[in-house]
Structure formats: structure tokens, C-alpha cells
Length: 79
Image (cartoon, rainbow, N blue to C red; front, side, top):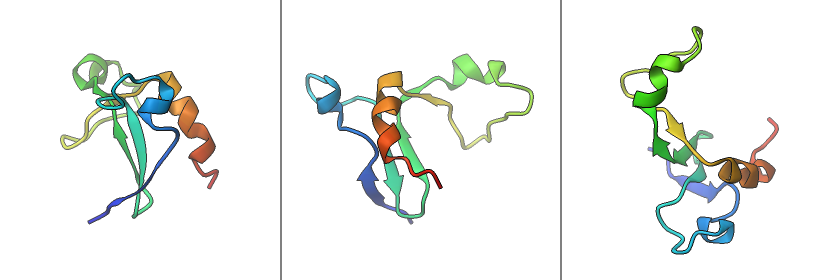
């Protein structure tokens, strides 16, 4: 089982969240994967996926704000 190693980017409170809770977030996991907290948009976007993309039954399509990803960019490794 993997665990959260660190947050990628700045915390929600530093991005203007009034409460610092219930906001998009990105975390690096101990096994090298990334976990994303975002809005579930699976129903809206699944039929709009490109022809070479698909989703497994156990997967969800999640959206995060542009600001969240921009703030995370500095912490995402190149390789």
C-alpha cells in the first residue's frame, strides 16, 4: 500500500481558499504515482475522450483548476 510522501505545489490556503479545505490538490505517493483531489467529471467527459483514450471501470476522470496545476508545476519532476 502506498502513502502520501508530499504535496505537489502550494496548499489550497496559499492559493486563496478561505478555509483551506475541499479544494483541488495533488500529492506524490510513495510508489511514484500521483494522487489528485478534484471534481469528478467522468459523466461529462467520458464520451468526449479522444479515440485513443479510454477509462477503466475502476478509474474516474478528475478535473483540477488551472491554478492548481500551475502551482504544482515547480514540484513535478522532469523524469
